[in-house]
Length: 267
Image (tube, rainbow, N blue to C red; front, side):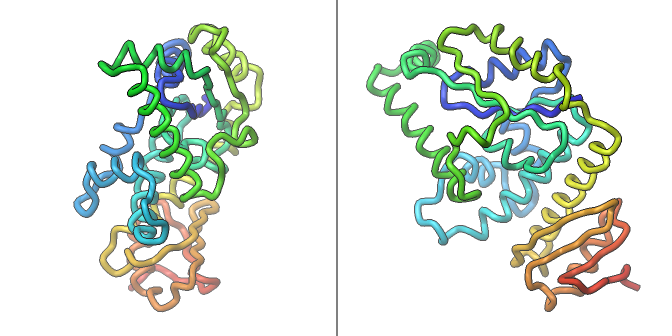
């Protein structure tokens, strides 16, 4: 009942690895497009979300709040999708979107450039130089995206539990390495882990709902949940009444504290 995230460079075999893990373990495979469909709302379209995931900011600071909203929606969709375990997510920054999630195996698959060029040329009708430019541009965008949103280097080894180089391994062999790691222990979703995962999903849902409501969408807050009791921080006392209305309407909420002030259900 593990949750597996796969980070990869363009044409490094991440999708194929996810499909192998899903098929062999019987896990659901979740990709970026699935998240975009789940996260889209009346206010934020699928195209907006897809662009936010693919394109790094051209001018840091200019679109920060819009990206905060997009990230809140995407994170809520992902935590809801994987909250019960038995899921493989192969998309951008899964290990960061699910930071703190129990039973999370954070994989990274890497491959030499020649391997990636060969894979790309099998899929794209482009010259060698065009393929190289495409791969380098996509990798550069991924690195900028994670740096912008999380302040970390996408390729930093400490972000991952297992890094697999497929230079001399087939995807099936890489799949078996990952499965052996899952089965070695430490990634089973225990009752305590399930409770923590439910809290993470609820906190993400609260943050997403606040990011959509007309009277609270201007906020950027930290949200935590403990047994359904929600704690919100972020200098938002002036919007306390609106927050109270939005949060208490969300199923599963058992308590609410906003900047250390306890707010009961509205009358």
